[in-house]
Amino acid sequence: MIKPKKMKAKKLLYMAIFALAIVSCSKNEDSKPEENTPPVFNGRSITVKEDIDDTEVIATLTATDVDGDELAYSITTNDNNLFEIGLENGELSLAQGKSLDFEEAESHTITVSVSDGVKTVEAQVGILVENVIESLAEDPDAFIVTFKTDTDGEDITIGLNQGYTYDYTIDWGDGTVGNNASEHTYDNAGTYTVAIKGEFPVINMYQNPSATKLMSIEQWGAVVWKYFFQAFGGCNNMVYNATDAPNLTQVIVMGYMFHNASQFNGDLSNWDVGNVIYMKGMFAGATSFNGDITTWDVTSVVNMSEMFTNAESFNQDLSGWVTTNVTDMSNMFSGATSFNGDISDWKVNNVTSMSGMFEHAESFNQDIEGWNVEKVTKMNAMFNYATKFSQDLGGWNLSGVTNMEGMFDNSGLKYYDYGATLIGWSNAPTTPHNITLGAENLFTCGSEADDAKEFLTNVKGWTIEGDLGGCQT
Image (cartoon, rainbow, N blue to C red; front, side, top):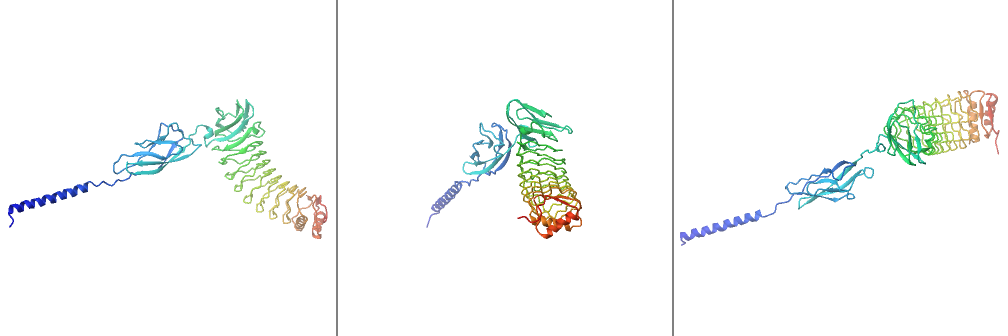
């Protein structure tokens, strides 16, 4: 039998051991490390002016950490070492001695990392550079051209039209800025960028001594133009570098705009010419011009005479042009030696003059028999020396024609197309009397064609000049 006193002591011993075990387990559980949560840092985009100094803060980048740990910022992928960041405060700035330049790069991308001492996260930060307009030449609203002087002390004159009101600022590109000035003397020879901003409705360089010194159009800007007659006429050294379009909302006249601007060539597809009514001679003598004007809205145009005269390189698709209001197409493609566009669907029902329209257009040979020419009075020299042209025009209604002198002289009209044309005209009751038709070096072949020729001359009183007669060997 165990004594009660000994049993009590033994019981107390067991209880002490059990308590120690519990405490020991509790200590082991408390000693386990807590799970670390990484910082939260999202990339962002920042816009900054290009003239910011390296002592200024571009932006403060901020990350969060639920554990409350101290965070350290660094740039892991820089862009030409342009940027630096505060280790503790996340302040992003330019590195010492560095600068931004909108003209060199409009944006930069860097990778920023944030660490809480245990875990690190990264994100991309984009820096968008905002252009700071330091001169008129950098202003998107300015009309910008370049002039070249060859000798020291040379003058430049920009042609104006005194019938319009001007109120503009001009930067001559040599440090001189003025108001409403149109003449300037350059101390040193060179090429200068000239920028104009404000009310400048008309420029006219035709017969201006400085026309040959105008080297380029760089930008149209926000100038509201009002009149473009002879604007760049005679600017035979001028090239076209502009990518924007002129504001033509108030322009109705573009006559001889690029007359004899022999180096001029460019994409004009973004021009809105919907209000223009006068395009006479617009590209006449612009021997290099072959710009895209396919989609031009020419529904308001009344006069297209001489529009591409001697535009030797021009050969664009004009099939979509709506020409219903045009009344004058005389000499339109005269001397346009490359042009052979499909214009068979043109509506020419209001045209009264096609005199010389394809004269010396040595590539042109399109089917235009479907044209409604009943209002045309002048067809003289229309295909003179159009050496590839050979089409049957026998379906034309000549009821309005009064002049066909030299019409087919030295053209490429083959005997069968020439014959079919005469047959068609002789059979039409609307064919007029007493017409002189130029047919130099052409001939017919076959009795039907010969009969048609005889009918036109003997019955209708026509005079056919230069015709070689019957079949030629």
